[in-house]
Image (cartoon, rainbow, N blue to C red; front, side, top):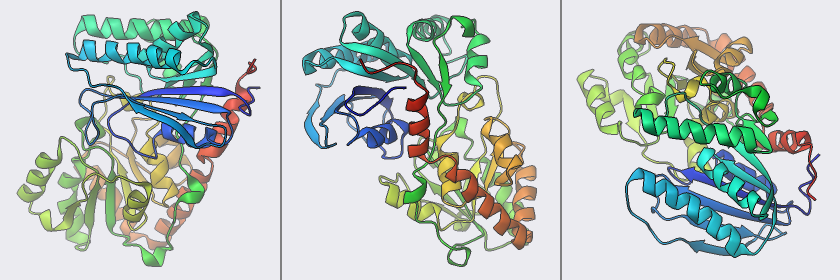
Length: 393
């Protein structure tokens, strides 16, 4: 068992935007006041939005307070040079801290590779490869994809432990030749929610016919399907609305499609939500939630555990989800939502069926909350650290 009391830890990640609900942020929140010291390094993706393209470094003391914070200088260049810069920065700032850390948690393969380098030089004792996303085809170019998966293989074979967000990930890696029997011990660390912090509302205080999509407006997340389903729903339930809680590259296209379908009066875009409070305020007032991921073997969601789904459940929202991530089957089996095909007619039928059965909806809402309670972040981290079979010294 890994005892975090008195331990020193590092968390290194890439991010599109800073949000208190990300798994890395929840890890740091859990560790603050428990670990003796924490170093966090946050590298922005080249296409990051709402944040500067500077690496952020924050150190926390034993009481969880920030003791040092700095920003790395910006570096421009193509994507390959950008990521190489991140690896160099991670190694540099750990050396500069002057500490030897008990556990290094790298979120993605490049950050884990930096941890392996640091372990080789004695600056960290153990390395955890935190795999939040996986797809066999990460880059369209064969050379870049082979390089990326080669780094994946090195990290799987040489890390001290692998944290997978879903049980499907080892199978996915084996499909491209990364052998499970040669990999480090693997633990499933599902994404969760801050269950007790969510201000859930009673049914009488929500709009049961408000359907919410939360997250980045990107093609691989499937936000546009509801706009083609909504006209059919409105024929039976004319007070139905759709809320897009988030922002992204597809916003303009979605606004145009809503106008073309004659439903713009029933569609609202909140823009980027910066705090948990803002997110919960929108989500808890709605009645249903969308996770309509497009199918395909190259999608991240086939092997991942979408974090927004747990937030939906924690807000008491039954989930309409395509059978892409493995959590979809759990949601349907527990009565916390419905699996739908990536088809507007099927989605419209599912929504109308739920709206027409008020008692069934309220039972589904109760099941959603019950399922969310199983995925409280603190419970997840307690189980994760208890499962580690190495000590801090």
